[in-house]
Amino acid sequence: MNDIDIVRSKIYEIRGQKVMLDRDLAELYNVTTSNLNKAVKRNIKRFPEDFMFQLTQMEFDELKANLIFQNGTSNWGGTRKLPYAFTEQGLAMLSGLLNSDIAIQVNINIMRAFVAIRKMVTANPVALRLSTLERNFEELKQDLEEIFTDYNDINEDTRAQLEAINTALADLQTEKRNIPARKRIGFDPDK
Image (cartoon, rainbow, N blue to C red):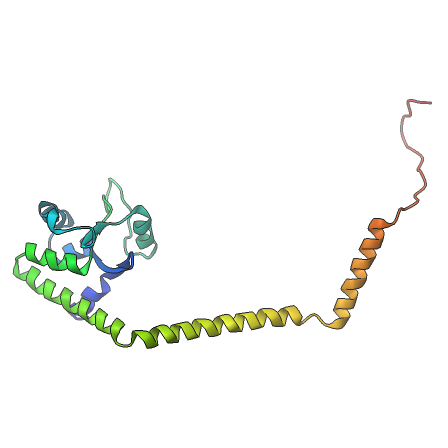
């Protein structure tokens, strides 16, 4: 797996944006996550909400469900704070903060990965969306046809039998039944 594929595998879609998480960036830059976040916090003015945001607990739980994070947040290991997500603009801003040779090469690979993803998506977006919509429409149409077929599968004999059962039940409900009184068993206080 080449460097761009490694970077591409660490790009997630969260809140409708392609982002990378602080943990993955720290691994790529060969620094600790806390040191990466400290560098960002020292320059927090460079990172508005559309450049970097902290994940909510629900978003973090969804990432855990997809096995991106194996451990939750805890005091005994795993992720202690909810991770930060960096958009493409945030990554460009981050590249200005980290100046080592590794950081420069990683930034080049990250930008190439984002460009490759953008090219994939924009290659033929209308055709992709139309084919997806057409496929979904055909699946829905097929499901509806199966439902209507199952509904109409009741033949005339079955319908007549169901009608007879409904009529008998209605007659039983309206009919007053003359049942003779039974002799009571047991102690009768009136005698």
